Amino acid sequence: MKTIISALALLSLIATLSCAKDVTAKGPTSFKAYDKNKDGVISEEEFNAIRAQKMEARAQEGRPMRNAENSPVFGFFDTNKDGKITQQELVEGREKLFESRQSRSNKGNKNR
Image (tube, rainbow, N blue to C red; front, side, top):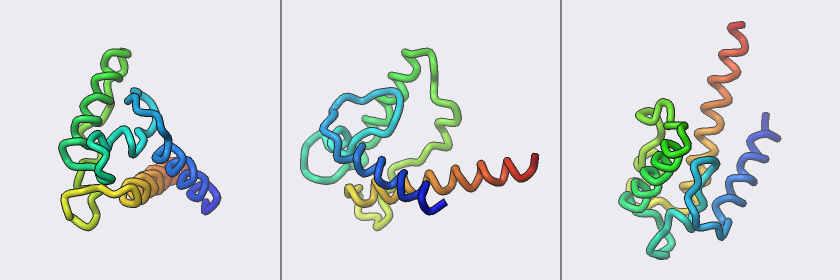
């Protein structure tokens, strides 16, 4: 389990550090793509704009986001509640999401 979490953290960090600026329907969005004004943090406006772009891209592919209302909001990542998401907060939030999904998946497998 720790190996999986470590691998996810590494992949998340690589994606976050990626120079790709395009928002795609699949996969995590890089920190740089979120940080449109290049001030080193993600504002709530920047976060919501990218989230809307991802949802639109998926809809155009005919794959609207299921359970979009349950996807994490800005406050989930802004753990210190300062109105900004740092690169570290984004990585830690993604790790937390992965762990939560793994836990739910493991519970579902035990009930079979």
